[in-house]
Length: 226
Image (cartoon, rainbow, N blue to C red; front, side):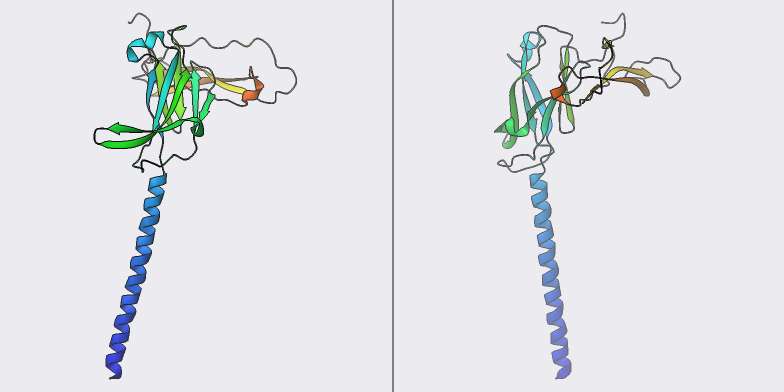
């Protein structure tokens, strides 16, 4: 009789342990699912010029749509992020915080997904068709231009020395030089190495604080080509 109760007790103990393991595993899965739902991983899905793509050369503003990089509920807002822009080889500047964007739903076939919309962001290609705007959100970059290929910019020439000790500085990339590792210039799509020159200067507006330059390695415009 004792042996029988001992077997029953061991069986009940095993069932209890199995139940604890199942409950614990279910809670872990629920927690993992909740974390995946809250993680937007935002990226720039599209930059739309005013008047549509056909009006790109005459556009002065753009609408920027930031999409989730993972599956999230349609009512889920992203964790706070910032939107930046860098014009040509100018330092990066703040555009807006995610809280300033418009939350909306977009449709892709039979599926809906949330997005953050930033409308009427300045990006003037009418005044200077050679300008290039690079928008940065989270870890994604979008290059907006009539011709987004890399060309050698006109480096900013220092005009003098700063007086006293600057409270803040702008760090800008002046030149990115692609080469073959032996010092010979190479097209960007063939180069395996780059050298870049960075300079620091007092900002034009000290309220902007410290900035950093942003360049993209894209096919370079070579002399004599179209």
